[in-house]
Length: 423
Image: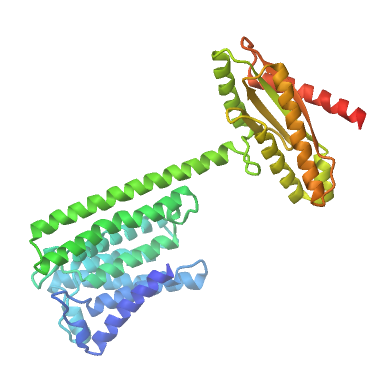
């Protein structure tokens, strides 16, 4: 907000000083009219108003005063345009031959009104600022593309490029002071915000930049205007197509990340409970469809709480991660492993009968025990081990995975109690 106000103040202030000093800098540049003194004063007031926007009463009063001055400049310019062609006020104030265009007067009136209404009717303020931005932006694009109606002493659009730039910047500043859904989207830190910040500037910039370069080359005589129009269209379409492809790739990457966050346990990378149930159910149905046996295993880490209490949660988290990796190493890639509780995991082991499943359970217990020994060797004494319960899934078994988890959980607790009696 303050950056845009500062840029407008610098541009309008410099032009006004040049007029006051009678400098030739402000007279003519490539058949482009400069901002008139009245326009400079209006935009300078607008810059002060946007810079002063804030919640404190003194800021509000200053913004309203600046908005009033800007509004008065705009209305005066409109009256001057209707009465004497727009050059009477500038001639009376500074004795210069400069006119304020109708479009510039309208923009000053709109932006001044927007600042006057600030704090009283933001929806109307937003629409006034949007209208001013549309006028300024359209004129700016016309200058960049070299549209003939913006050039030459007899051009149909008399608005100067400086006024177009100032109008656009002040409208952006007003929008930034009261962010609506669109401006909030630009500052959003989520996927929508990042996508908008990357795509919108390119969508606007690619056609304008390609058009500016092509039209400048045509004016320099490098090729005809018809060729320039074709090149401008080709460059814009190619650039936007490339942008669309990059945007799709970015969205796909973000979608994969969001899917991972929604389906995976953030600490271990295992499936969370909901995703494990869904994945395991699909795998179990495929296994039964092809007449293959399987088993559900529930694995609970014994004495895990002692690690947290003795060595802190960082060591406890490390124990969980290592335990997950150890369990995963004892399973095939087609098997499904998930974390279904704080220190509890579940696995769907495919292509095994009950005897083979019990063997896998023993391997998983040994794998977790080795994790405990590794931690102890690193100076973190512990009694980490695992209790495992197995529930076989037969070919014609009507139970779903959720029911098998309940059965395996019961058997796991039986194993845990039996182990406690021997410790």
